[in-house]
Length: 417
Image 1 (tube, helix red, strand yellow):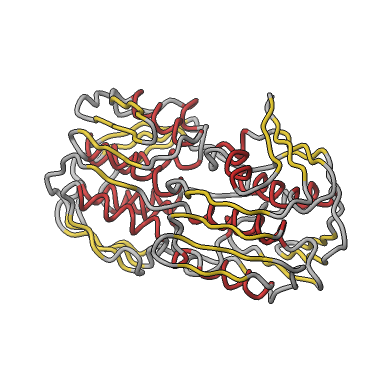
Image 2: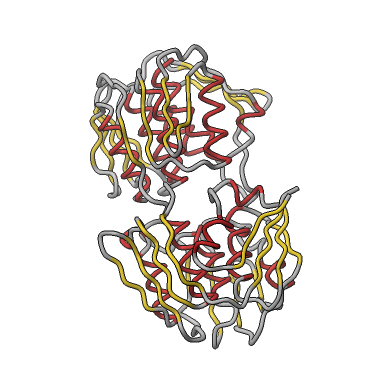
């Protein structure tokens, strides 16, 4: 079992290059199924979830090989349309393969996906949209048996702007006859990245980043070379790390336009943040201040994935900050672990109130989920003494080398087995 050891009390100083975005790479890997040929993804992060996606592709008969931070995928020899229950359970994003397999094969057999336990995250919107495109879906024993000999484009109206449903329907619509319009689509930057990748492969997709995405289907698609966008949640994590520990850092490749609500909150707290075409710098020399209520919301609102790390950064702030979680029900599972370190946090339903304390103390804590684990690292940087963080497999799903990155930024952080 691996663990992270973080010794707090050191101001940060240094620079790291932000890894490719996990939440962009995963749907792009599913989209490679539509491109009959080789796709070369540059800047691809080596993560547990990426590895799970690669194994899904290989189970379908595709080829995949790594060379440094470049992943080459060739789906020419795809010879299966089913994904095993074991592979589906490894991550929530495995559901995104459904639309791509249907578009290419006309049928698909999968089980329900797994992932972090953050409360109900049904794929009903995915299935409803696929049915509207002409898919027949039979649910039996936890498996979905889907057939779609002829997908037909039409207008799809989502009842809420689901990122996963928007991406899945974009992929399926690439194989549909005619034009598909997804209304009330999610607007996240990762969806824009997916659109740019699909178009680089020959698709005709427009409108990503707005609430209406248009796909003109049945275009011949081919392989390409592509570089994924930088990970905005990893960026938010390291900005919060600097806010927590104090100091000055530079995050090369980061784009502030992707996380303006996070940087706005950190500026309220007292950080100095500047950005240009090369990255983002963050300077924090004084104890932070509490900020206005933080309410998570679909993009361009405050990202739910950044809620935990900002909370951790504010544990020693002056005053109290209110957090309201509006995306997932169980997004405060990290709170009990932060309290072990001396944090003062009260939770009532979807609301958490963080009252700043003078000091935090290192403790033995465990990761409850991906972003909660990152929050423990952020808090540990401000704690007195050493913090031992267990069950780090959650962190490995989204951070390529969090201990190495924190060391590059001046922290005393290491990983042991």
